[in-house]
Length: 135
Image 1 (cartoon, helix red, strand yellow):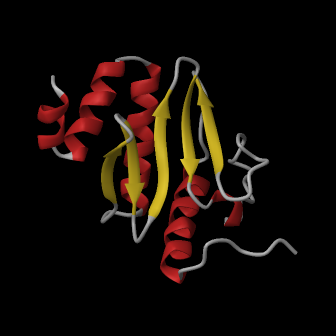
Image 2: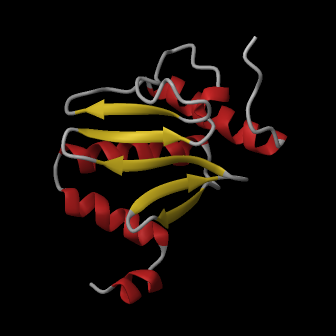
């Protein structure tokens, strides 16, 4: 499929295609994460950026969903400003703004904590704050 044809498709369709193309645990994981995001925020906006990266937004970017050989990486745009009592963030911990969750094959995500993180990211976007101060 050419880039022009992909541009004509909706982001949601492209994300569904990516999940199907992966056809393994990564596709299943991305599908599960997508479902959890939609449960937490039914009016979330799905986007397709940077030549093939699923992005979820709500009043600003929430997170991306990249698939690599060994992990599905969920990078939260303003992750450093989010409370993470369940310690879901396990990657990109040294950055000033972003935080990520790497999910390996067979890995599980605390669904309730993940949905809370999505809701907190949306609330942070709505507040207009870029990040909170580290006290």
